[in-house]
Length: 396
Image (cartoon, rainbow, N blue to C red; front, side, top):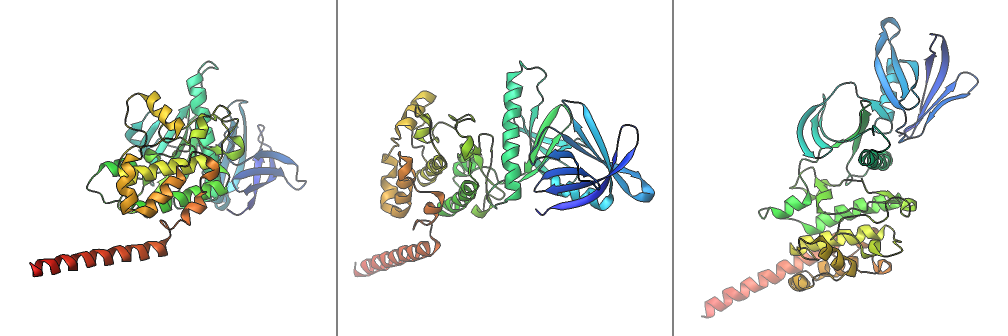
């Protein structure tokens, strides 16, 4: 998003006015006095300390609108007057990058999970994830929930600047002074787990893997590690179209350099790479490749590689060992040797032997030209078998 600069008027508590310059660059907000360029306000992109409140028209003849900045902790509030054009452009520039004050409450359509709901706004149906502001410092649950939501908002704000078709989009960050919420696009096609459970649905496994790995490649190029890739976090706008796949739920995601400091031992048992459980807990983006390999195993076999034990400790033990069940892969190895080859490469216990997302995308199983040739050969073999069967029937 390009830099945007405009003139505005600062209104102090006594009603005195002073001209200022407002600059938005990649979601940051800088306000300087004019003409001496003294910094008055600076909010980095993703900041959740200050709430922006865009108000209604207040001086009709001049077409002036209000922009209030409010810090809930310090109780400091500053106000500015803007033209309609600048008001609209700044809203567009800062949406999903700064916290907006909620002007109206949306209609709640359904509760999806604790803290997650389907809402309808004036313009759209979206998913909302909310976290309450802690009432006391002893409210550990609220503090952790808010911290996780802030982290997710920070990651998604960057991804809003670097969009990718296979990553869920952040629409807005809002607050009503009791809750902070992030609103996301609604993936009405559901998740991959539900898709696999519907036996009537035909799944194009290679197409799903291409879109999943394309999204992971984009994340890794931005030094983002998802850390919770699983069937439930792979969503679809349309479950009949694998190209509408969206990687979702960035609550455990972090930047690569944050791994040692931000909840390092995390993920979902049965999907987590073995090195996450190691004593030193040193790992990188290759953990996402392992988890994507588990998804490929799920799709090719319709089984779980570490079993279906209700005892979570049993699953974790098998997960740590990296010894997945190979008995389910016998038919895959025979009928889909390229898929099998990619799978065992992605599930290498040693991350140094695991391919990157880009290397996975270059594998013959996911290479479009090779897949077409392979499909043609398979069809020719089937046609040949049919001719032989017909020939045998004629002879008999």
